[in-house]
Length: 461
Ligand code: LLP
Image (tube, rainbow, N blue to C red; front, side):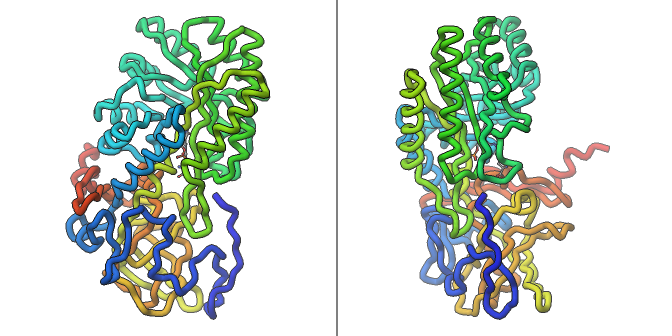
């Protein structure tokens, strides 16, 4: 996440808003990097996606709804696959997973990263080839590991000495040799929110490089010979814009690789540098293209291999957000508009922290626009909030909306494809919204809306 530049004064509201806000003149404009690629305003002023107007989508599917631009998602998959060429691109399913998305990423040539038995079940149910699945997690259970081994999952990313023992026992018991990568904590402070940075020393993931645990784990696996150690893995965090973190990570894991070669005469064949590539949530975010990322990452790895006198390992990456994040926007309906005198205007929508927890959890920034019509009204600085019983239930902290925004207006929030539906909750017993894929003038529900019956189905008391 970018450092927030607070402090710009907007109009005579006396309100100190952040400097990344769109200019007031832009209330109807769509900033391209924020929106799925088939989104535009019709001549009448309404947003459309995949050739269908949001009014029609709202009438057919209700609000709130996550609207997925299928052409955009497919294009992003293809761009990553093409840009990384020889390297394998594992789509990180934790960002958003359902059977339709599993099929799309398979059709577009990607691999899949899962991090729980549940995600594995969705992947297998959708018929994804198990050998193209990587299985992550710092505390995989015996049953999750057994299922992965039995299904023939391509690689398991081991995260602790306990797991090495557990997986070795299971491999022997089931007569299946697991292909594994070793998750290494490289000691990088990624420039992102503390909760989504994963490579600094003080944390639960991986084997510490600095403390020697990573080397000891690699040697243990090689000496025991039960598991098939294919390579090293590093994931430094999420929503990262600056490739310098990847550079440090690559250097450090490749140094470890050289150390392992020198100690045991084995050159590991694979290297996974994880995901974490940032996307635009506001006009201030300037993400790299897949092509740029691939070029820089390949260059970094080639340079570091040369320095360490290593053959270039087979590279892989695990983007989630950068693939699905920008392909989706959430469509809400405005329910109330409340002007709190001299402070700000609150625009309440029919969802909130149950469909997007990221603003409350990470202080994330989003953008919004009135979607059902264009407006010539004066711009007004507003806060978009949800319907939950919490004052922290904020969807968009600050945005210019037209001053005539009113109950019944449709409001669209872009960049919600990653970590919104996947982290959605039933807080306040608000049913979770559907995910609707739109393409070539037609829409189809790929995850249906939760119903009150669904909520009551688990309540067996
Ligand atoms: N690989 C590993 C090992 C990961 O742990 C993650 C994300 C990824 C790949 C994909 O990262 P991405 O490319 O999507 O940034 N809930 C947080 C993000 C948590 C990310 C967890 N791991 C958020 O909403 O920002």
